[in-house]
Amino acid sequence: MARNKIIDMTRGPLFHNIISYTIPIMLTGFLQLLFNAADLIIVGQFCGSISVAAVGATGAITNLIVNLFIGLSVGTGVAVAQALGAENNQKVHRAIHTAIPTALVGGVILTIVGVLFSETFLKWMDTPANVLPLSALYMKIYFAGIIFMMIYNFCASILRASGDTKSPLIFLTIAGVINVALNVIFVTVFHLNVAGVALATTISQAVSAILVVIALVKRNDACKLQFSKLRFYKDELLQIIKIGLPAGIQGSLFSISNVVIQSSINSFGEIVMSGNAAALNIEGFMFVCLNAFHQTTLNFTGQNIGANQYKRAKKVFLLCMSSVFVIGLVVSIGVYLAGPHLLKIYLPDSVEAINYGMVRLRCLCLAYCLLGMMDVSGGGLRGMGISFAPMIISVLGVCGIRIGWIYTIFQIPQFHTPEYLYMSYAISWGVTFAAQTIAYFITYNKKKKTTQ
Image (cartoon, rainbow, N blue to C red; front, side, top):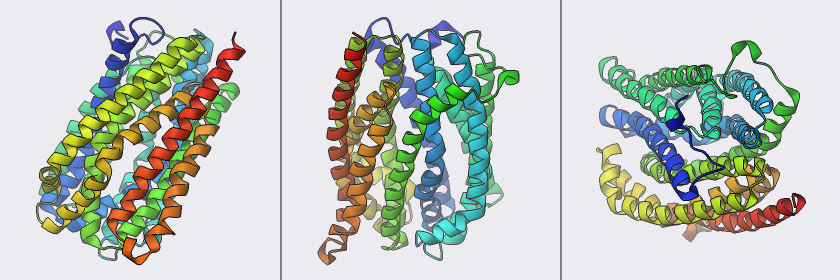
């Protein structure tokens, strides 16, 4: 592994290292979303708004099913980062060779559940009858290849924990170009509609998984992957589960609240669904900017706590929090101002759907900095090895508020509108951010005292 790809998290100028580490994560997220957006844009341009609604309707339920296992990749990253900070190469080796079998088992389980129950899940969400067949087809093909996404996410977490954020960016770029090319071929040449974009996604994820595995195999340090050493090491598996399972449960419960919201959106009809799906995809670009600092906080904190550098870990938290606030405001304002033009790319055939997309952007854009700060505070806690507390806080603060809002305020006739539905997001982000930040400083002070 070339040294210029690796950021030293425990030594050197902190702000420079944080920015150098975070930018490739941002770019990776941007590319991932661009390639995902290609799915919606291509079906929107060549197949119409019903196909856009069909793809968009799968997002919340797909995240609900997948997030439980993706959370374990967070546990993998923290386990590797703390072991690297402590310079415990044996523990690094065991964590890596436990993570890959975990990804494989998770992928098999997700494939079985997703393929068999896609249509049932979509019916539970009150997906309109004219959208349901296309949505179910998309989900079945997507889940048939989900094992590749699991492998990529676990291996990318290992690379990032070691300080390498550039390699995942390179691999995703290659896979993404393949994805876009196949989207065009499958939709415009073979007329496969949503099946084509799902198939293109699966093939591109396979490519990214192969590339990231090759990168780990070629390493010459403690992070080198050796297939003959793959097994479940008890201590490392328990650490991954201890940190990752609460993160996965949190992600799944987040998705439950999003499923409830998506079901509420579905009740307004296909035009609102199309506008919401396009706006949500645009918001994703704001999210990856901010979520990049969550991953930075997670891994920088993990390595510095492993090295017992508590003051440096606190500086990481404060720098990431300040950065995410400023960037969140700037990006949110830019997205809102460009909103009508961006939505038209996704929805060229429906002015009404564009208007509904702007309703969502108007309600949520300026609140996105709260989401970023909430994620940074959660990343700081998990980087210290604390995962149960942010899970409980997030479940109560995000899921509790959103679901409670939907079954109380949203049920009042004059408040039964998309605008009031979207308001639940901003309120839940603000409350959760405040509670997690308090928990961070309480945990930090306790851990620091135990090492003195």
